[in-house]
Image 1 (tube, rainbow, N blue to C red):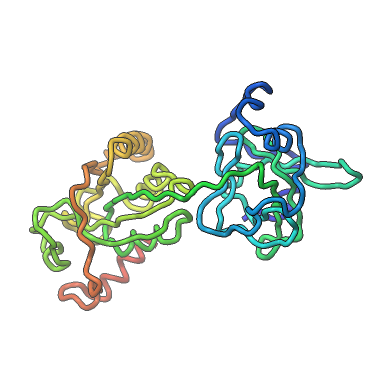
Image 2 (spheres, rainbow, N blue to C red):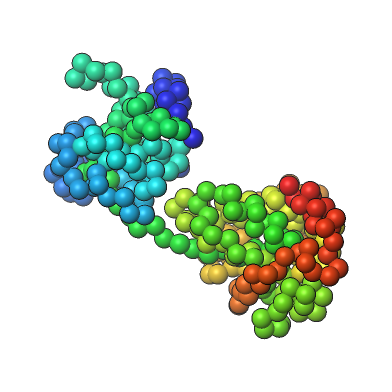
Length: 310
């Protein structure tokens, strides 16, 4: 979380590098933008207070730069400041905005610009709500509202309760469900999967917002939080249901999975055995599927499993 101290440091000592840079000629910006958008974003203008209905809009979604479409803010970080301009407590990523000292109009302020295309956005002040204490006071004309999208990822890497707990803490992850995939039996039970005869892997299915976290980032977390070099085993858990596997939902996910595994291989002395397969069907685990109520799985084993993956 950024604080006022971070903002001052960026303005004084330099900003974080952006993910990409967009440059256009003045003529190209004029052709793309309305007169008001051009005046504000390219000529450091300011719109009149309370001139936009965006101040009172708080529906889910994200706000992007009107010039280059870089996502800047999440609606969840928007608040009613009563200042007359849309206000936010945090950018969606630390490097999407750049900070610059502004002494115009006989005031000392911190100007905010899109770090991708250098569009003027507004200013940031240290009078916002806790815990950040920041108020990003933005010109509505510099922003465009974008509806949040959802995508799905499906991974297996050992006990699904353990992997589920990891991804539930990740920003951008909307939900995580434990279940089974990759086997031959329809609607298998936990007992049947643990018996090793159904061919299913214990997996989690993640619903995520790709604007906040990418599929590549999720894969990096997945491969970093289990051992992808042990065949059909994770720690004390042994069996095909505990195999390391990535079920892709489309060709793009398949290609990303291949490239990530190639990148990660250099960090291991032994080959990565993670399977990459298309998702055919996902069976959600039973709601009553609680490990210490099942025969053959002792509380001691459960505690050992959580110790390994903690």
